Amino acid sequence: MAGASVVACCSLVIMALMAAAAMAGSVPAVYVFGDSLADVGNNNHLLTLLKADFSHNGMDYAGGKATGRFSNGKNSADFLADKLGLATSPPYLALSSSSNANYVNGVSFASGGAGVSNATNKNQCITFDKQIEYYSGVYSSLARSLGQAQAATHLARSIFAITIGSNDIIHYAKANNAATPSQQQQYVAALIQSLSGQLQSLYNLGARKVLFLGTGPVGCTPSLREMSSAKVCNAVGNSMAVQYNKAAEGVLSGMAAKYTDLHYALFDSSAALLRYIDQPAEYGFVEAKAACCGLGDMNAKIACTPLSSYCANRSDHVFWDFYHPTEATAQKLTATAFDGSAPFIFPINVRQLSAI
Ligand SMILES: *[C@@H]1O[C@H](CO)[C@@H](O)[C@H](O)[C@H]1NC(C)=O
Ligand SMILES: *[C@@H]1O[C@H](CO)[C@@H](O)[C@H](O)[C@H]1NC(C)=O
Image (cartoon, rainbow, N blue to C red; front, side):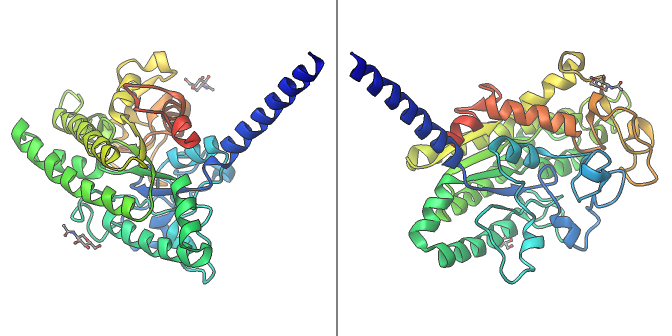
């Protein structure tokens, strides 16, 4: 009896230790791709209009510093890293300038303005295709430093976080405010065709745990609301976001059916964020329409610059500037992606994805 309980006790301890080791060791790094929702400073290194390395950006970041994040504070890439117990993956363009760049702890290719299509903000950002090209170089560098097999294992355990599509849809909706459902479908289908090839390239280059952040309800960003006299959400933008997220899910589930070693979590940012916009008080928000920082009607006419006005309480605003969420919004959304469930994050959440 005593012997049995000793065995039971110790095997429980060992199991707990193994579980802890598995948790701690399951995600060694995050490789980040996408747009301004995840940019942590790549655009600081570009000659572009799409920058955020000046105030009032970063006013709630450590030291009140503008870092290039399009936010008053941290963004989703920061909160994802926090949740995984990792440091935020540094901007590729900051790392790559050093001769002994180390990519083992993750790197971010995300660049403000980027879209699925090369044409979106052409010459103003690192396009998604270019991000993948840079990553391909990182892949080779890891294979050289760790050895092919070791690099493959490392990457297979890492999370590939991708947030892309908003800029394509925003551009389209702004230029085609009266697009018919079939025109919308056509554009989304073209995006999805590109996205499918891009995700395949990442799989070919070792991605095995993909967190795909679908686009938010871009029609409700202050900039697109501002286009209507009643200041309502832009229907074209919102409907295309829904279609795009659904089709992206189709691409990923198709890939997962074909490649049994591919795991993914898809975050429906549109469904998740619409909750805050429809019922702000329920989620701790007071203002879900106007931007906190900017100028003009709803602070949505002009970007957040040092000359813009800003709101007193950034935690009660859903939107920081005319396109981007506040730190408070990013934090709440990331928490849902990490521990939430369908219809917001599926077929598994980020905690489950990281534990695989
Ligand atoms: C987009 O740009 C990449 C290079 O950055 C190129 O390889 C690719 O063919 C381009 N795609 C299209 C559709 O033009
Ligand atoms: C700011 O807003 C948050 C969220 O609504 C609220 O909890 C907090 O009390 C507000 N702070 C101040 C100083 O009003």
